[in-house]
Amino acid sequence: MDPVRNFAICEVSTGYNNTATEIVLASGEGAKLPDPSEDGAFNLTWFQSSDYADPAMDPLVEIVRCTARSGDTLTVVRGQEGTAATNKNTANKTYKMVLSFTKKMRDDIKTAIDGKENARAVAAQSALDTG
Image (cartoon, rainbow, N blue to C red; front, side, top):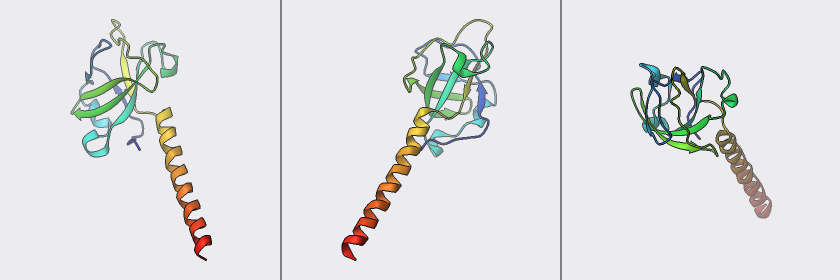
């Protein structure tokens, strides 16, 4: 499963077009996030926060997968979980990335629970068969 952090909301340093994959956060913001080289990759919700306090309200909201972090610089795969890679470069607007619960996280948890339930059922059946 993806790593998590509480209250991991980061400001992006500047605007980016829809093909950018190296994203620089504001100074010191990268420390709020997990380190993919140690903790594994994770998804972030990227949105324009000047006009949209809630990422779900931003029509250009995007989920990206962070695969590497060096200080405040993230390497990301754009347009994850059914979202499209969009420009995040409207003048005089602030953009943020938030490490929050997404459908992928829910699916990962469900898969883990289902796997444990299936393992228990197999073990119980095996005990019945041999007992």
